[in-house]
Image 1 (cartoon, helix red, strand yellow):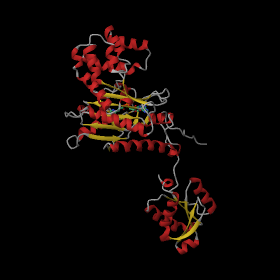
Image 2 (cartoon, protein in one colour):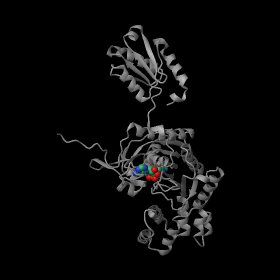
Image 3 (tube, rainbow, N blue to C red):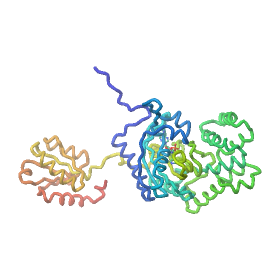
Image 4 (tube, rainbow, N blue to C red):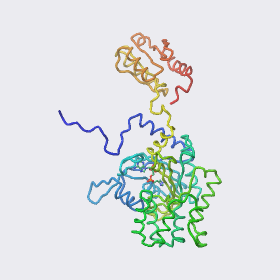
Length: 454
Ligand code: HAM
């Protein structure tokens, strides 16, 4: 016997059977509808890019440890995109003169990360991205928060079940600069340390900080940045805050943003979190991550933030952007946890499908002719190609949940008629070809529109 190959996809990657993909598409369609309400347009990028554009400002860990790299020719290093933002920046930079600002764009790439497969993490995943570019004001960040909240509430989630944890890189810069008195070149190391802090216990974290910063005062300061849940709580941890800190861009940004969230009644869904700093290097302003507030799903569901300088790797023009990426997989785990996925979402609905059953194969041409008429009317139509044993054909139609079956035999073929069978009432009658569509609509009206909604 010849060797058989494994039926499994490679580790960390998934097959999506139609019923699985139906759930994925239901999630993506819901998000697409919401972004359209805000005036976003869809775009797409290649799934393979030059490594450099990710190496420049994403993160060393992402590129060097968590990416699939392809080297087809010597000196040419390509990457299977681990995220979308650098590609988006490249596309916007390329046509920045022609694109009308602000740019509101939406995309659903498959991203690839060489991570340990676990609950909430796969090696290939759908990651819808929503970004607004060319709008500097905090209103853009606010719009993104609004979209995130609309997505969750559209699925039926409540503020008790999810929270957007947010912070501002500018605010953390101001703290590092004015309060911790850190050299500006060391600030990215603070982000790196805080981003890693929840993966380490206290002792490991302290050792990690000692290795990098050496200075005890700074180390104690970084410890204080770890887990404050309001700006006041965070600032109370420090003595002698200089007056200039309160005039700094970062302090003003976070306090203004808090005020705006309150004014448009979003505060309930959002929690300031000093430990949220994000792992990607290009963020400069408001940053955010969405988590399940319960214990079941510990990985972030959404992550995003503002990037002011990312486009500078492609052009001299300065265009700021803010947005998020969300894992369809992480969102689906969250929705399943709270019972927010309708039971029938995984089953295809055949109730508006017209099924053609034929007494024998002589009817095949007539069956194709009928199917054309029906599909032109926008009804799905299936022809049973077994062309014998009517009972079995009706059974197959019934198993799918079909309501209307068209039966054709020698008589129907000669007289250009059709026997139309209502599978629910089990009534059937012969109709002329030119009455067929009206008869189909009659049966549909009898069952009400609900039964036939996609
Ligand atoms: P990120 O935080 O790296 O941000 O990823 C965003 C989301 O993608 C995560 O919150 C998670 O839901 C999902 N995700 C990440 N890795 C995996 C994985 N291995 N398996 C399943 N889902 C995963 C970014 O990628 C930024 N580019 C987002 C962004 C857009 N920032 C601005 N615009």
